[in-house]
Length: 257
Image (cartoon, rainbow, N blue to C red; front, side, top):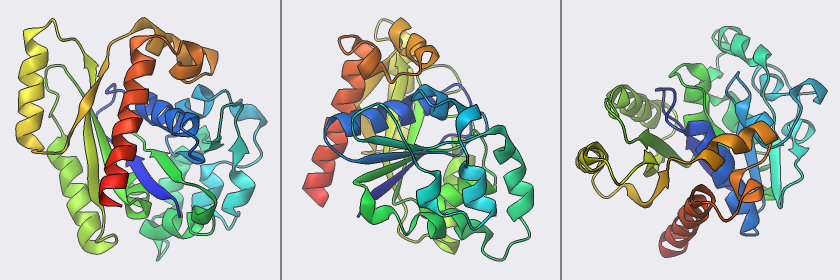
């Protein structure tokens, strides 16, 4: 049965989609059959694994607003053990369309129930907002992974995210937990970086991953080639960091599983 991890932070530019894509790809590389669910209307996770959004029949919009079967939305990528549920711009309208539905917070959880046995991991790339789509993702998830950039105002807005997690825990998913906090855009040469690290560790005691994601040109270039960074340039620091992060996730799973 798949473990479902939602990658979420309503603050944009924190490496959320980059992390979702590369964690999913690195899990696949480690022989874990992995599904990446793109529920960001921008669809960057979809194109980041080489899928042309114009060529797909169904998207996560159909998953949320209709009775389309999850199996019919899944697309196999060219990468090892990696599958994707693509997104498209029409997803932006989904929040308005599901708001009147009685099961509006459970649409995704119910839709993916039939495929959880087919995968080892399901990674959900959430939109940079705290609306109904993100609520659906957190309701469907076992854990939430929070990327935080090592820059000024790193913790800005995180109290709202934690309030959303607490609300979902109270109303629709009592078992949701924090998978971990991932420090991105790390530059150890800067004093500010260490200040942010210390601040984040105070805010999330014992929840910060040991692995940090550095700034890197190759990490920035990979999406434009429709490739996770471990397939674009496995030797670069960014690729090695995501591979290390997935080893950390898998070790934790063995320890507590």
